Image (cartoon, rainbow, N blue to C red):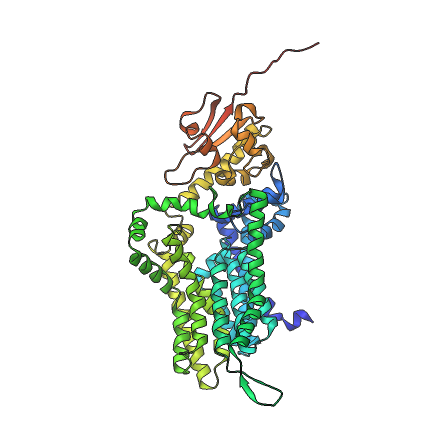
Amino acid sequence: MIVRKHGKLLSLFACIAALELAVGVYFAWHLGYMHTDALSRVANAFYVLYSRDPHLGAIGFVWNPLPSLMELIVLLFYPLFPALASHGLAAVIVSSLFAGASAALLYGTGKELGLHGATSLLIALLFSLNPFMFLFGFNGLSDSPYIFFILLTVSRFCMWLKDRKAANLIVSGFALALAFWVRYEAVPLGVALALGVLLTIFSLHRWRTNRESVRTQLSLKERLYKVEATWLLLLLPLVFSGLLWLFFNWIIMGDPLYFLRSQYSNSTQSAALLEDQRFVEMFAHPVLMLKFVGQRTLWYAAPLIAILLIRLLDKRLWSWSTLTLLAIFLSVPGLQLLLMLKHSSFGWFRYFMYVFPITVAWLPYELSLLKGKMRGIGISLVTAGMLVTVSLLSYALTNPAIAADEHSYLTHSGNESYTRQIVERKIGSWLDEHYGSSLILTDSYTAYPIILSSKIPKKFMITSDYDFGKSLTDLPASKVDYVLVTRLVEGVPLDQVNRNYPDLFEKGAPWASLVHDFDGEWRLYKIKHEDCNDFIVF
């Protein structure tokens, strides 16, 4: 019965997910390259199950943990399919499933709001098969699940705008909280939605009837009560999630803001921006920064322009709901501008793409408000906006000056990470063959491709192990046999091995002897342990 009722929905989900998965397996397994951020999240899940010291805290406290938690389920099958970890296929499976779910969600939302099936399918396909969005369905990054949750958040918020049902607001709130557990960008989105609630309730023209049957407009106090109640329904899950994340960071890592200011955090990694002359110039001239943010946002803005044209023709442009849409849309570039003012954002092209799913999630609601000929005009404008976005983003993928990260991923052109990843897989196999029974200390922040490629991962003492810090402080006195250290890269934050022993890679140490050099990128040192009495007592 369920399959018959939701057959089209399930078919759309299965088709998009299968297509994404096929392309993702081709890139990750056949071509042998996985985006480093995606592979790192797989590693975080891998340590929970298969490291020398497995525990849930090994999932890490810098990146939001939900993607790795979902990949953890897939990695249960790692003993049968090692490529789930070594080639990051666990991340590909998760991102593919969410890409299919996003298409099904858009189609289902359109149908629920009374749009024709063909219109709903058109919106879903133009979004999901947009080459740029399709890329994030198969590359294993956290963007695919995040996009699904913001689609759900905004679409249910729009339903609340239309029918004022609390159920839609509750779903929107929990979807927003789940989005936070995927990416921190959910926080400014929540702020924008809170502003949208304020604008919506203060624009209400509803009247109440008192005992004398006299219709009176809602007072300011009553409206404020409504705002408060609505905020509680919508934002409480997000606020609770944020407090919970601070609490976990505090009790486990000893710092509630560990995710924000540790040596592995984004703010620390962003120190490399000061080595880039282009960013140095922008940091010195905020107008250039604003221009940069505006230009990148415009690549995704065609559907928003279509909505504004529809509202202009339908004489609804000057309304509180338009301000609500703009507030939600601007939360994305607003965050990037704020981070760049703090010198802590690389301004990558994909960081701005979330305005696109936010706008697309609004489209079914917008079209549902139109009647007669106006709906036909609206569908035409929306289709044009989506097709323009397809063209723009397809071009962006071919231009390394615009979408450098995405272009590098697709073409391997100038992609040092791809070359390094191939080398590091070989290192993992080599260490298995020659030092399978030894204990090798290394920082998993940099060595995760090697660890994932190893068939004996328990031979590594890694950052999340309880005894890592003590062993690293005094390696000669530890039980570690070898230390694996990577070459220092100027402008990139140091891993803990290099932080403690900054000269180890280049000069070695009195207590360590070089065993093997891996293409000048990694070096394996044997530790000379402190002298001990080797007398045999009879």
